[in-house]
Image 1: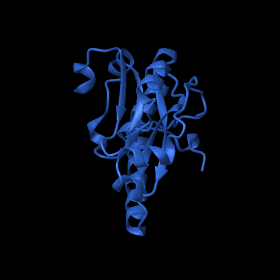
Image 2: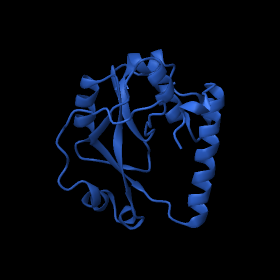
Image 3: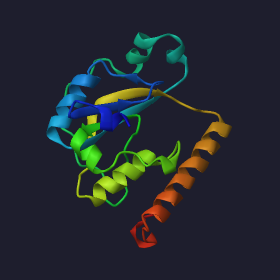
Length: 170
C-alpha cells in the first residue's frame, strides 16, 4: 500500500527497530539514481548499544559515516537476497513488480520480491554504503526460531515460483 501511495520516484525502506547510518538517506538516494532496485548493508550488533540511544548505536557501526559508492552486482544465481529492512529503488519498478506478496507473512516477502525482480530482468545489486545497524537475536531459541521461519519461507518461495531443485546450490 505504501508503494502505491508514495509520490516520490526514489523510495527507501528500513525497519522501525533498526538504526540507519547518518548518510543513509543521501546514499540510498544516490543508489536509486544508479539502479532500479538495491539492497543495503546490514550490520549485526549486540543488544547493549540499543539501550544507550541512537548515537551509541551509530558509534558501533557508523564511525565514520560511509561515503557513497555505487551498488555492485554481487549476487549471482536465481536467489538474490533483498534485506527487507534496508533496501530501496524506483517506485515504478516496485509497482511493476506489484510490491510485497503478503502470502509470505513475516518471513520471505523481501526475498520473494528479489526473486520476482530477477525473473523480470532487474538486477539486485548490493549498496554497501547504504547501511543500518540491527539488533542481534542471540539466544538458542531465537536462532532456532529464525532458522525455522527462514526455511519455511524458502520452501514457500520454491513452491510459489515452481523452482526446479536443479537451480539450488547446496
